[in-house]
Image (cartoon, rainbow, N blue to C red; front, side):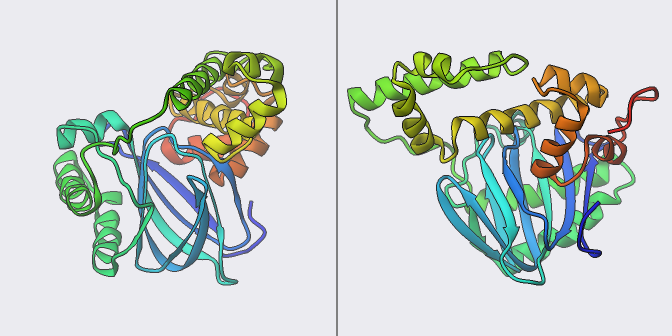
Length: 282
């Protein structure tokens, strides 16, 4: 699966709390393509150093660092040093975190060096991974996430005044995102997306890249991979997920899914327990 013998990626859907997925990995050579998670991504670096691009900025995350990413934010990931990096993550659906905290959480900083809380994260994560029942899991989860939100979260995104031109551009880009989401399973043309934004084709590509820090094509492929991941978690077969996400075939899905999440669709379903009984292998 991986070129380096020590690399691994393991997902586990929590059987005790809907909307929570656990993830443990060690990576050396593998580099993640720009991708998104529909929920919050909260984790801790155990060893090594990760480099990732998020909101247009490169971040370094050495051991002892918490990684705190908001929902639906494009990011990458790769090793900064030859030894790679080992880390654990919690992927939490916004509705689950909102129900827990009583409101929308926002993390203004993608990384923060906090060895004490990172160590607590790793220990708690291990207990959650092996939790025998919902009482144990939810107790550990609540205490850990409460500590992270209390120390580094904010109640909402800061709002700054925007000009009329910025407001029009933002509205145009929102139409583009809505168009992409509504037509992921179809062929999308650059001219149609530019028309949604009310811009010329080349101006649209520049404006989109400036707003979202990836090209329109990279964004589209990331959303398709995320759509497929959501479907795979609901026991949809890889071939059906590929079609529903607008990918040409299952092999196309395999390539993009591995680049985005580090495993193939079939491996992901096997790990989280949603592999269809009668489905093609991915």
